Image (cartoon, rainbow over all chains, first blue to last red; front, side):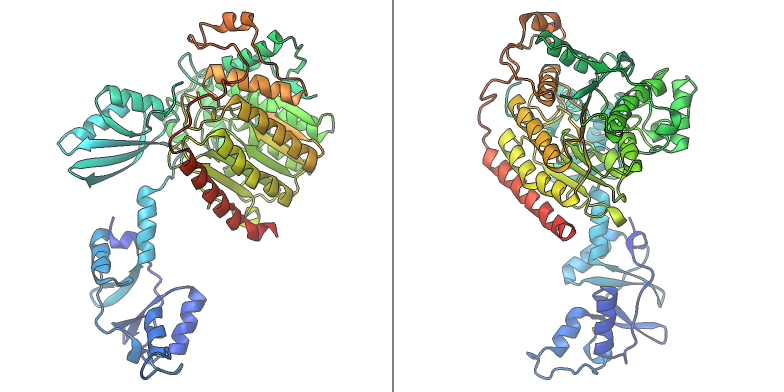
Length: 208
Length: 377
């Protein structure tokens, strides 16, 4: 998954000599929190709702007025992303700097923006349910062929795997599969029979 | 007194000897009703017509079902959910499933024409079938076709789905419809098929706030289930003000069900059925159409649906099961004893995390009600 797959391309920008009042209005009207600042076709800064609040707060030593200019309140050192960056690179940059957005540049041209919300959308896409399916969760040893053996067993039963989410955990690999069947208990039983550690579905806490 | 709809043609919707959605489930229940000394008067329905199916389903999809039914090969069948291990196809499946749809539709007609108030369709409940896709044992959606008929005749419908799986197909068919409220209580999609039915699925457009989902924790017991049902369902139905209830009465939330993880008992089902009939008396002048649905423990489903029949006909629920019935079905029940209609009490030891589960269900129900409040006032 690349930045271009999740970025917003219709980017709303402001000029450095726009007023804080105008920025505030745009942010409320569009329900957004980050505005790239563009001058002469070039990205020169980013202004966030937090920048506006900080600049105009009464707690500030010399608070800006509503007619104060964007260039006074914006961040000028801007981290950017490229459309072909992997999403995880963008996420790591945003996480480590604790920033809420990355403008996306192609050369010097602003082509998009990616925000924390876009990353949440990506997470929902990775973990979400877009086909009727049941859930199987398996802990695999972190060795070659484990996942292949698991999916082969599922394929042998003519079942279709709609999605797989898999992540390392304490030297092992936790794997969540969404499979097109109501009979996940049946499948879990077969997987256990073949030696897999199935975390869901679990046995019922009563005898029946 | 309820009208009962059932026909021998229902037997034809048979997905194979190993398949859990067996027509034997309702045969065993009807046989148990008879063994208890009741004469079952039944209405034998006509199959639904192609045109009636098309009130809900896309024509391209119907053509695909018809082709497979006629034995013609189809390249993209699996993409339509057809011919999968869950929803296999066989020659004649089109007519077989139209027979079930016809039963539910007949029930809807009895209600819309004022010829009956309480109707029990002893089959159907194919709530996973989508307008252009088969899923989860379901090819055509009998409930959606029946609901379409009711709304076309000016009746607003509150659909209550107590099957353990989310009623996704019915919800999808009416997601933007302001004449149909859907309420589904199910084991959370986080754990169980089909994966949907989260509290944020509230409907779109004119239907916003009318699609209601209460996902429950695995191993939810009877007390917790009935508690959250009571928190949510009466208020929701009252807020909408329907003319008729349509109920998918799957029996697979029973603790003995082999496919799912809730822990209801026959006693809980009896209470639930009585409560649903109360709601019909209170809000729809008694008008209610009930279908069967999931329920894959033969031992549990036969008893649960017998209780459904008795309650809907205002008959007493006796203690003992006739020995002759138990003997007749002993082999099919695989050694499970069936001496009493109700489960043993208590049916199982208290679950170690019972209170945590109940509390979590309460929190989810409250969140859902908070999300619905703006639409209720």
